Length: 75
Image (cartoon, rainbow, N blue to C red):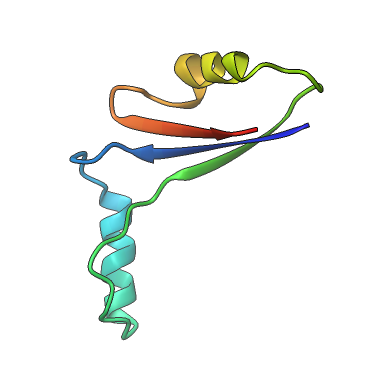
């Protein structure tokens, strides 16, 4: 079974990578971009029947830094 975990910086946390992408897009002529937030997508192959609570525990313990990042899970 595939599980997708999306990890993003929390609102208010500076995103230097996102800002670099926004600046680069402007330099390429894409002036309509006012902001970019960069995150990561993690795909997990888990055995059928894996509980969402187990994936949440994975996020809390390893996949996301919950001090500065939030995450969402798609089972």
